[in-house]
Length: 256
Image (cartoon, rainbow, N blue to C red; front, side, top):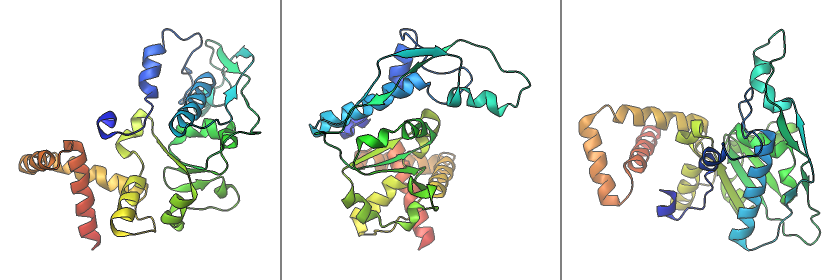
């Protein structure tokens, strides 16, 4: 679908599935909810390299000179930590590369906004922002980091038009579990901005939940789904896209 629409994307889920038996080191920790620290390095490097390729620039990149094997630590053990066990769980050792970033001397550093779920925290905490001149992480399209470390800053407080004009690169990232909410309203906000000139963000995670609920309801109505299918053919888009557009339209009518 993304290829048909001409969208730039990286399918890390497919990459990990294809390489889970080939990888020299574990890609997912047994006792953690996110990628392993080793995988985090692969993902961060891939994102930066992909941006370089698309923009034909040379950015600071991650590298490592050594890998240390150790028992799970930090986020690689976060599920187990949440279980509040008396004894530490035992398991295979994980790989911990000594992640470092190249000097930015003479390197291009575009500005970036990342709209993502918790899977981006690992890269954020390990300094991927240093590869950019101005980096903002819009966590679930709700809270803005690093700004919110000092005082809470919400995306809804920002002028979307100004933010788009100030940044070069926009990354929307979601893990498989959160793909139904991809963008958490950001895509709809940008659509409204260019369609009607609305510069203040209208939608957030709550908006995404409303869309999901409406789509689930439409799917229970056979006649409605028949209409959706016809409109999808007329507009030359997928049924899923047509469902989303109808859901957005209903919410807009309700707000009006």
